[in-house]
Figure 1 (cartoon, rainbow, N blue to C red):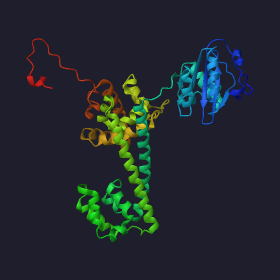
Figure 2: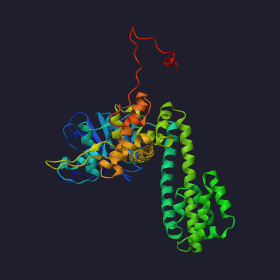
Figure 3: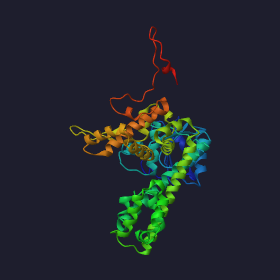
Figure 4: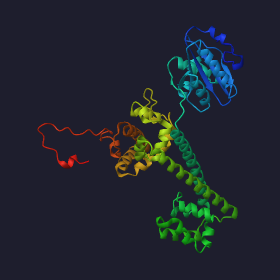
Length: 442
């Protein structure tokens, strides 16, 4: 590739494969930079020489580009690399897999770090990005990445995981708006019932505000009906009394209607979350490995981890599984400066988010609470770092439970206790006392 206008792209319609003869003999690599509207491809030979980028429009020229790769593969050994980010490249990856091309995955972080090394300029654009991908594939910084269609169960699981995760975001949005409105118009309500109380949301969806509760003589009976035996009568009386004596700002009719809509939408999102969790529970029952994971982190989180990271057995060690979550540590130190250890976050954010809530639930257990409090005190009262530390230990435990078949015990997560290892049967040596029959019972 000449230095002048070296990144000026040629339309795939105008590509002449005879230009490949300009490159050195032997295998070639092709780097792809895929966006929503265009695909840039750069061909590299074994000596590090490049052709000018080829450009194809998405999706109208995708077939023409793949056919060009197929023709090239008939005359040269060919490896094609793509970045691992986004979903825009899935269609071209499927098309290339269908015709048997060798496809490799390149980390987006590796591509980003290589930008200045590549040509001495810390710039990034489509043609250069494709050339960098081709070079990283050529020097072995890639992994096989053929397209594989998911099974029906995997597709269902992925769909429900996506749905429950989206509905969680929707639910949190409406809860935030409800909290803001209640702080303005009925601040006593959240002191009596939690903001996440279904009973409170049903009250708001039905009445719209404290004034309507205060005016309804049967409000107490209605609240008790919604709350059932989970709602104490003292709380019902306190809520009705607060509706009559609230110090909140008086609501107009449009404001009451607004609060009703917020509560209705929050309830609708909560129903969808529960529906999705029930479906995920059913899917977990069909797989023994998922059942093991469910017992440890719950069905929803188990499916999220499975969809985000795959089968833990595909990882050669527990640390590799933890690294896929982005929970491995990084440090920036130089000379006398000693940087703090932080997690890299170079992994599935969805997996980390769901595992975070598992760690929060785990903190409530007495066997974990003591370690958490000591860690929090050591870190100057910063509880978040202690929760992340539990997440890191939990990630290792998940691998050991699923892959090694060990039983999960929260007490064995912490220093001074053996890491989740399989329980080996006791060896009875010759000359020992006969075993107790009770020890042999299942």
